[in-house]
Amino acid sequence: MFVRKFTLRDFRSWDAIALEPGPGVTLFVGPNGHGKTNLLEALGYLSALSSHRVSTDAPLIRAGATQAQIGAVVVNDGRELAIDLEINDGRANRARMNGSPLRRPREILGVLRSVLFAPEDLSMVRGDPGDRRRYLDELLCSRLPRMAAVKADYEKVLRQRSALLKTAGGALRRGTRSTDGASALATLDVWDGHLAAHGAELLAGRLRLVAELGPHVASSYRDIAPESRPASIRYRSSLGDSMPPELVDPDHSWIRDDVELLEASFLNELAVSRQREIERGVCLVGPHRDDLELHLGDQPAKGFASHGESWSFALSLRLAAFALLRADGADPVLMLDDVFAELDRTRRTALAAVAADAEQVLITAAVAEDVPAELDARRFGIEAVSTAAGRISRVV
Ligand SMILES: Nc1ncnc2c1ncn2[C@@H]1O[C@H](COP(=O)(O)OP(=O)(O)OP(=O)(O)O)[C@@H](O)[C@H]1O
Image 1 (tube, helix red, strand yellow):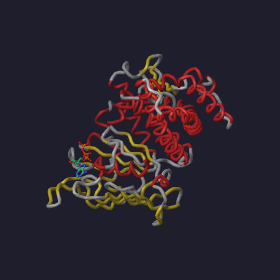
Image 2 (image 1 turned 90 degrees about the horizontal axis):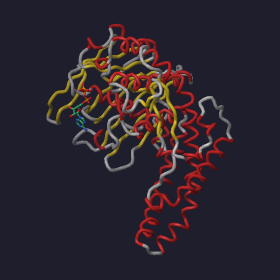
Image 3 (image 1 turned 60 degrees about the horizontal axis):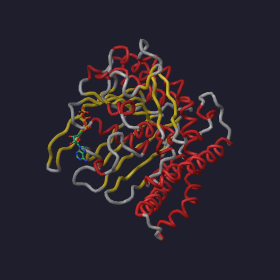
Image 4 (image 1 turned 30 degrees about the vertical axis):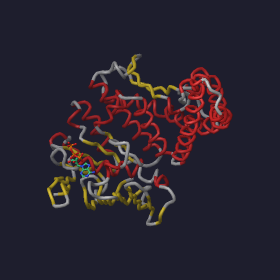
């Protein structure tokens, strides 16, 4: 797939821009801080409904504006779809598809599939489990858009159940048998059921994804860092001993009944952990506590991998996502944000080989010479200028 047309209004440092990048490689070159990453971030947002840099929407709206707009015409196998998104300050965001309003922005998920590799990706290797869960969930929702609704339902139930645990825990600590505490305890069973139902679906989706990703991560890492130890990934679930071991086995082939088995295991672990959860007032069991373990040889990458190895691992995770989406039938748009300067020759060559073969690649660089010559095709210069409306980016 490729983005044929791309428009922005009041997104970050861009007041208005319309670009037609076309298939193949497009390079955005300009000095640091002039707005190149903002372009990729906007497309990444349209693809995943989240930014790779910030967790809230406010910084995405240009200073002084109240709404940012991102639009794209996406061509997939000859068919065109236009998607538009409004990011609103203090109001719900809104989306349109081919001009018609959608009930929820998440209905555009899956239309623009992209893989963005950026310096922030180092946190997938070195950072908290949340960064790795985000990687998994974005890929999951891009491949199976209905999982976005499952995830939203799960998070809603999680918030409700966490509030109940806090109330029950507070009553327990105060040593009182307050009405609030008693009714929180009485309703917990119902919320356990909801949490296990949505959580098991999300967990099953992630487990299947990790089983499919594993071989791609190993082979991408081998290509990028042939001299290093083998890379592997493994899903670590907070279901602990309740987790059926065969379900985390990458060779396990999935059947629908497995989701029911996971749900039963989930309920079991909630029952085992109930007392601990009430004492601590937090929900300790579920996909929100899980992690994707990254290993180099038999060591965890986090805490042991060198800087270069960590970069290679992060890049392999992205290239594995690219390979998986490609295997689904269409190349995702590949976006590389200022990453060549960080890579040595072997890694640059491996990345350039994948990029040269992708349907559409968007690359940013402060210095064009950092980008391998075979990728320097169509080039846009980017610069920021001072205007009465503030510092604005533009294409030169
Ligand atoms: N909400 C906003 N409103 C206006 N300007 C913004 C907003 N958010 C960020 N900017 C500006 O955007 C610029 C950064 O843009 P961007 O991150 O795209 O830079 P870049 O060209 O990719 O730089 P580098 O090469 O250093 O990565 C900064 O000057 C910043 O002040």
